Image 1 (cartoon, rainbow, N blue to C red):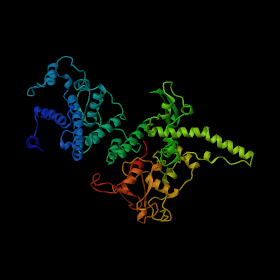
Image 2 (tube, rainbow, N blue to C red; image 1 turned 60 degrees about the horizontal axis):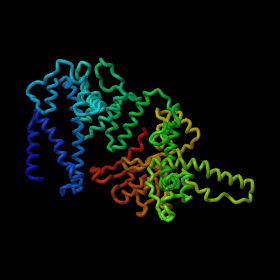
Image 3 (cartoon, rainbow, N blue to C red; image 1 turned 90 degrees about the vertical axis):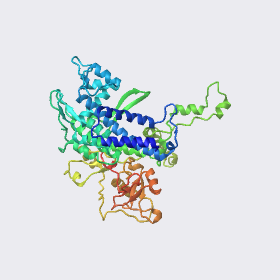
Image 4 (cartoon, rainbow, N blue to C red; image 1 turned 45 degrees about the vertical axis):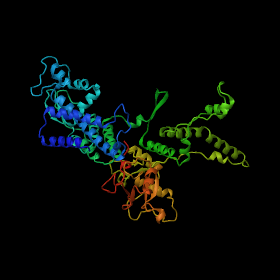
Amino acid sequence: MSETVGQAIASLTQAIKDSSCLTAEDALGLATLIPALHQRLAPDSEAGPEPQSAYQQDPRFALALATSAEFAAHQALRTQIYAAHLIESTAANTLAEGELDAVRAGTVDFTRPAQRTGQRPPFPNCTDLLASWVDLGHFEARRRMDSAHHVLAQFDYQHQRYPAQFPLLAQRFRDSSRPPAEALSVARRLGTLEPERDEFAPPTTSTVRDDHGRLLESVLDAEMDEPDAGTRRKAINLVLKTARDQQSEEQPEAQEGIFRKGLRRGLIWYELGLRPIRADLFESGLAQADNPRSGAGQAAREAFTDEQGDAEKASGDHPDFVTDEEAATAEAPEAPPIAPAARRLNAMMLLLELNAKRLKRLLDATLNRAADPGSSPPDAADLDLPVINPRVVVMLTLAELEGRAETHGMTAHGFKLSATDLRQTLAKARIIPMVLGGKGEILDIGRSQRKHPGYMRLGVAVRDRGCIVPGCTMDPERCNIHHIWFWSEGGVTSVYWSAMLCDGHHHDVHAGLIKVIPDGGVPKVILPSFIDPTQAPVRNRYHLIQTA
């Protein structure tokens, strides 16, 4: 740090600490200085984004700057909401036009009282003033005002002040160690569930409760303690969706189906609505179809072509201005990689093609052989089909099975079942009792084979539900079974010494970045110290939360 800049920063920091109360000029001076500092840190717009100084080529500086910039962005968001609150609390829309001109020009004399207009105000309300003053759209200004009501203060029609609508979320918003955007987002979504307040009724704090009678804000506040962002977001979505469904009078079974939504951007769009038990079967099929190690997954990764397109390519036709020699030596452009959504669609289309073509050939061959026992069996090539075998796994407790619980089980992909779905599933399902965590029920085949058999993989999948690294969303169908006690070091094939890991995290374990421990039969991971300095064993909760 240069001596001049270092001394200036130290002097400013000390002056702020010594000032028990800032003046309006001081506060605005600091507010003006902050964006100027960020502009100085960012690259010159004319010079471009390339580093201009040696320290800008240091990756350690990049990480440190990212940390500081993130913290500054959090504080800036708090200041934005606080500014919206002050505009409303001071009724800034009633300022005289001369005062507005002085504020815009930066010539305000804060030693004298503000002058209010005695006529119709320039702006009918504070939202319109905020939208116009900082060039926001009306809806963004309305969102900031609503956020101020959620976490700072509310006002009635007589401009009397009331506490924030969501006190617990207000505490999270003010906590400088937490990102405020999440608290504001949860507050906005929770606000849509609150009953509409009469224009003349006094504002109140949160009133919505869940089906257990708990204040919904308290439930959300507890879920927001989850350290992993992805798991936390999934849990919050579930709580809010469940509450929204409770307020809805629609029967979900009546809404099930495939709905054509029309032409948009050159594509025909469909909307699919499934009951939880069918959705889990569908998810299982999609996960298997997207697995690169399966035949269906490999076939789905090939670009979709129709017969007409294939015939045109095979015909060798080309425009008149292209010679035969040029056409023969021309190379087709490399196809772009297939996106995950397209892979899943390809897998579903393959199933339709199999039903229309290959299965018909197999049926014809089978019928011909039945008519002529001496005929040859169907061609082996026809039997090699890239198919998937979707499977529904429903997990429920003994209390749920006996009808003593309020819940009705959950599928392997996190879908909560209704009582009707559970009854229909049990009527045609094979019930496999599994005692997870018991001492005498551990499945173990020692070193007789390295690969886990299907029943053992099912046991691990039911326990882990997917990759056990916190925040990982990989489905169990695409995960590997990892030997916690390495096979190369004398490990055994057993449920106790096994854990589910996706390909990426499996490589991280063998590279020494992540450590897996059995922890009494429910494996946990120890993340790198630069991610988790506490080095506490942790486990992924993402798959344990029901899908919202």
